[in-house]
Length: 584
Image (cartoon, rainbow, N blue to C red):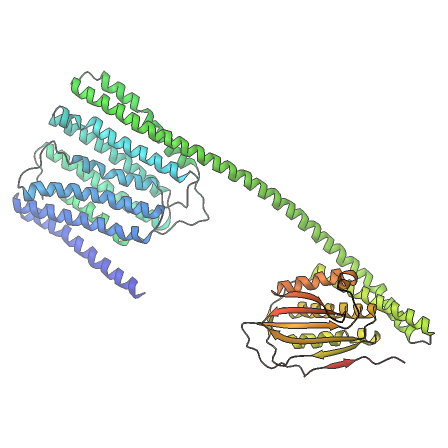
């Protein structure tokens, strides 16, 4: 904020200084007679004003990049050419103390100072981006610039070097320069109309300054023809005012980058390409005009013809390069279009597959709800059957029925969770608390199976970040699967423990059943394990299944420790030992 205040203060002081210079010029024009002192004062002040305008545009180029930087560099270059012409004028009038020669070789510098400004406007920095290829566009701009230089050399310079004719030279120079200024004003007006916000203000001010310069330079030329102009006269005041205006534009303009959501059409790029092609195809017309104009000397006609042929070769080469670039650009766009179509087809197939999965999820959810009622009834009847007096063989069969019903109920719960589980907010969690809760929830199952569950929880276990419902479901499902495997293999002990290792909180479920290494794949609950695997992966963890040396199975769940919560004592009690009670 302090830097912004300093810059604003500096801009205010700078503005006051250049306005003071303009006021001094007005006072000198009104108070001083035509003299060397007035000429020197006027020329030096105008040089300072143009130097100020050039310097004011350079910070914009340093703060920008890409097309924006090129735009500001072109603007500064155009004003720098104007400054160079004024320095040449000052050199003759102040240091050599003589009038500027007519014709003057430095007039081409004045003519060229508008060419970079036109090139800057063709970049159109107020629009997000053109669909037209950037390299081809820059070559089109180069073709137009070459054409403007060719036009000056063709029409003006022969009357300066081939056959010296001062009236014809001045008349042709004024005509070409006027045409160039009109094109520049039309381009500025187009940018002004099609821009918004800070860019619209910028173009409006630059249009006003350029229009003031164009009118004042025309009036000055009118005065020169009638021998009433002299340096430092009132004719110079509008010219100096346009210089001051340009400096103020550079000081106070803050046009930003265009919004990215808008996209420029291809019409502008096509228009520039057509203009460059028209410029190239106009060369034969100029050659025919040079040969057919019998009013000019033969020497000038030959110079114009040779010049046109040379420029035709140069511009023909540029057109050839442009066409090659355009071909490569079209090939790139074709490849990009094909890739986009392939990606669109792939996306469409993925959307269809997602819709199928969503339909399957809805179907599974509805079926699971319908299955819950008969499963609950079957579980109740099996428990009721176990409570009656049965023979040992009948009691074993009833126990197996209850086990399978409970397993089916667990499968249905996994199906519901898999189909309809919604994301919820993550919070720091105590894994010991989740494990203790899961063990309590599985208590009816392991008591019915006559399985001993030993719980060993580490006191200083670090917390994990996640969804409590999802992790609780994963722990319960892992315990349920382990209990089912134990009952299938005849095991009687399940060890549930927690500890921390390498920045992760670890849940370990170890069973002592005489299982084979691939028993988990043979008898495991694939749907339940898939749901657990998905939940653990969402929490950036992993599940490992390892066989024990005694033939049992060890399931490890590793979850990364929560960065926002330091490890501390758990809120759960110490190691919990739960043992099933044999039924009567």
